[in-house]
Image (cartoon, helix red, strand yellow):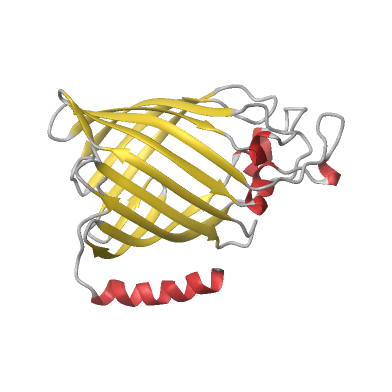
Length: 259
């Protein structure tokens, strides 16, 4: 799979230099049609690892909406084609977890002693299908950094609705994570097992999720953004001896400036 993606990457680089522009996949349902979006949000979420409390974070937002190349939600993307309502391209993003820095959990006796799970880079392909009702999005990525050698498939549908001056976008979807990646994130080796946790060799995990986001335009440039969502964790994840929750949830409020 990695070999075919690398070969595809060469073809796509040539395509990027020679093809004409396509409509922007960067602009999703309910989003402002601007080249740059910067801002930030305060997010409250639960930490599903055992012994950890809910967390509040301030997250910056930097989004570039180019005609072919775009940066969105921490990923770097290249549109390479369009056919009717379908569009497709390449996506690359860094990948890590709470266990990527042992300073975050070394004081938690139930997690202390776990090896760090190194960051990596994941990349693959995406396909969108857009209509007046909303957008279906599918992505399939693999580990390009040889840390876990796993894959993730993600499919979602985002509805394009309005409520007065609010742009409202409910979303539903599912995410399949291969067993090797689940083990990288939530597995426990024999050497890591102790009185607080048994060894755990994970199966693949199918997570399903639902949420809603809303945007209100304060002015031509300034927006208020609200979002919330919940993920029902698949058995491969929730059965881990270092996972304490069956659900992952978040809620956020933020502001952004577009230009």
